[in-house]
Amino acid sequence: MYLTKVEEQMLDGEQGEVVERCMRLLTRLGDVYEAEKMIPIGSVQVAGVSYKSVGDPGLEFLEDFASKGAKVRTLTYLNPAGMDLENWKVFGFPEDFAKKQMRIMEAFRSMGIVVTATCTPYLAGNLPRFREHIAWSESSAVSFSNSVIAARTNREGGPSALAAALVGRTPNHDLHQDENRKPNFVVKVDADMDASSDFGALGYIVGKTVKNGTPYFTGLPLDSNTDKLKALGAAMAASGAVALWYGEGLTPEAHLMDTNGLEVIEVGEQELKEAYEALTDGEHPDLVVIGCPHASLREIGEVADKLEGKTITKDLWVCTSRVMKEAADRMGYTDIIAKAGGKIVADTCMVVAPIEQMGFKTTGINSGKAAKYLPGFCKQKVVFANLDTLISEVE
Ligand code: F3S
Image (cartoon, rainbow, N blue to C red; front, side, top):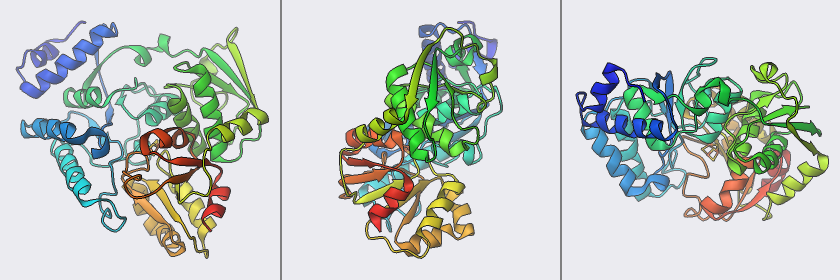
C-alpha cells in the first residue's frame, strides 16, 4: 500500500508507540483488503464501549492507550455504553459494573473522544456530509450513513475504528470506492408499511436473504421518515450483514443506480406476517423497550403521547442518546413518561446493558434488530410487535 511521508513516519514510530501500533493495524488491514492507499476521514464512531462487551481486557487496553497520551485526530463518538451514565443507580444497574464502565468512559474521554454514547451519532452532533469518508463501527449507524446520507464507510471493528480515529485515516477499500457500491438485488415491496416495526420486519427478511449484499428497494412509501429508514437498515445489518442499501425515491444516490437484470425479491403482507411470527418466541413481556436504534426526539414524543395520563404496570424503557434525552426533558416528554411509570434511559441500550442480570426474562420490542439479538446476547424471550401493541402489553 502506498503511504505518504507522514504516514511512513507514523508507521516507523516517529509519532509515538500508540500511533505506530494503530498504523500497523491499519496498514495490515489495508494489505488484506488490497487498499492502494489511506484516505483522510471526517469522523469516527467507535464500538466496543460497554463493559459487558469488552470486559477487563478491553478496559486495560484502553487505559494503557490513554496513559500513553493517545489523542484522536478527528471527531470521534462512541457506541452505547453498558448503562445510563448519569442515572445508573436509580435504574438499578449493578455498582461493580458501573465502576468499570466509568473507567472505560474516562479512558475514552482522555483520548479526546466525545463521550456521547449512541448508535445514532447522526442525531447527536456527528452528522457526516454527502460522500464524506468516515470510519464508523456500529452496524445500524454504518447502514444509515452509507445509505440515507450517502457517506462512505466500511463496517469497522472497534479496534480498527479507534485506530482510524488516532491516526485520522482509514485504508481505501470496499465501500469507500464507488465501484463497490452497486446494488445486487431488487426488493419489491407490496405491503402496508405503517409502523416502524414493519420496517424492522422487512429488514429482517431482506437481511436474511441477501446476507452482505446491497439491496435496492422499490415500493417503500415515499413519506417514510428517517426513523423508519434507520429501523430498516438496523434489521438488515442484524439478520444479514447489509452495510448499504438504496430506496427508490428515498435515498440520495438511488437514481444513479442501474438495476437492470438484478435478482428480484418480492415482499408482501404474508412475508411480513411471517417475519413478525419468526421474531416472537415469548408472551407477556416484563420489559418493553423502544429505541433500537436509539430513539429520535420524534419517537420519544410518540411514546409520550401514547402514555400521557396512563399508568403502566411493567417496566418500559425508551433508549436514546443523552442529547435526545435532554431535548425530551425540555419538551416535557421525560416527565410524561415517568409519570406513567416508564423511563428514558440514555447512553445505553437493552442489548449492551446487563438486563439478564437485572432480572428481566421477556422483552417486548418494535425493532427487528433487537428482536434478533436479544435471545443470544441477553437470554431473553422476545415479543416483536408495533408500538401500540407493546404499550397495551404494559398497561
Ligand atoms: Fe443501538 Fe443497541 Fe440497537 S446499539 S442499534 S440500540 S442493539
